[in-house]
Image 1 (cartoon, helix red, strand yellow):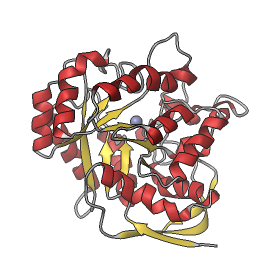
Image 2 (cartoon, rainbow, N blue to C red):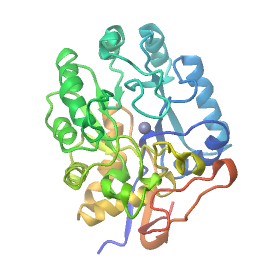
Image 3 (cartoon, rainbow, N blue to C red):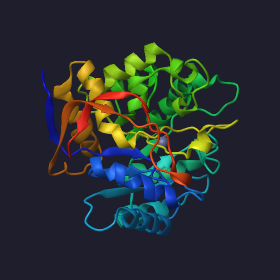
Length: 345
Ligand SMILES: [Zn+2]
């Protein structure tokens, strides 16, 4: 039995670092484990300009302090009015790594999102031409569609025609949760990849209703039934370079979760690698963990692999019930549970 695993330093290809006091509180958790992270732009207001992204990047680095070896990769939040010239200039300047497409009202702070992808023709043509990835929250927002079906319907109604219309457009389907999404990404004759969160690998939708309503198991896309969790797990450990690590760590202060209308999002950054490694361990796929965590994403984004390594050790680690205090008190993923691995730096 392997009790100690050393891998090349990994990256988190999807994270919400928030802003202000919460940014101060959470940024270090991500920087401790990962060399780089794709930082989501859904602030209030969203990050839609090069200047806003540069300023946000500065606040992230200031929150981390001197001497921390971490690179935040910034993204541009797409709106109906997104300007292709601004996006291309930001990409050329090394500020924008990718664009993020939120269908309007799909998730936290997405009210400014795109109402109809056909309004983005100029942007999509530009992204395709300059090789800049489009990151997609892949859910339809049609209220007539059952919330558990919104990703599968998105794949059929939006993603399939999108890949046909823009055959060279590099796409990351974010935080996939269904067998349909996993199959599409695995099989498409298209430059497409997907990120996978720890929660969608470890728990299914029963967790939301386990003995009562469990707001800390609520995220978007919402957890799905067991068959989908197993399909996503198979994709993650398959060794396919199209699947890689993206935590979607999304902290909300406790009161915003434990509420009559609780926010969507799971804060998994403090024990992210440990949680993922548990999955690969259970699946007998420890030899594929490094590809998923440290190689596939960098290659898809055309970035060099990180220098340096991290080590995880088999150990009983208890996840605390709460991390932080006051306005930054957050309940972490797997609170109160024991993970079988410890991050050793
Ligand atoms: Zn997200």
